[in-house]
Structure formats: C-alpha cells, structure tokens
Length: 50
Figure 1 (cartoon, one colour):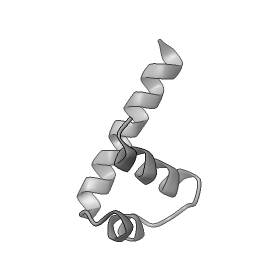
Figure 2: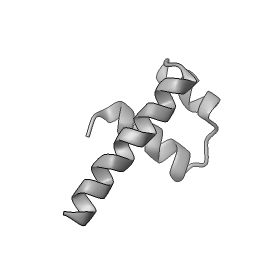
Figure 3: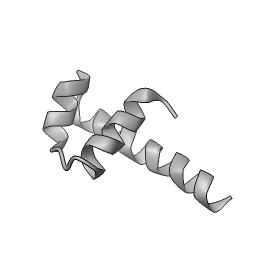
C-alpha cells in the first residue's frame, strides 16, 4: 500500500483527524485524501477477504 494512502487512512480512522487537517499534513487536496482513504480501504478489504 502506498504510504500516503496508509497515512490518510490511519489519520482518519485511528486518530480521528479531519479531512482538511490530513490534506494539509500530506500537502494534497481534500479530494485526494478522500481518494487515498478509499484506495486504502480497497487494499485492506482485498487482503482480509481473499
């Protein structure tokens, strides 16, 4: 999993950070953070359920 995907997922799910805070930390747009979280979840689901 790409590091930025993992960071976005961990910051949102484990640290309860706001999307805007994650975007600022990663230096990307809020829309990118949403995509990163979605991609990270897809990787996690694939690993867990296959």
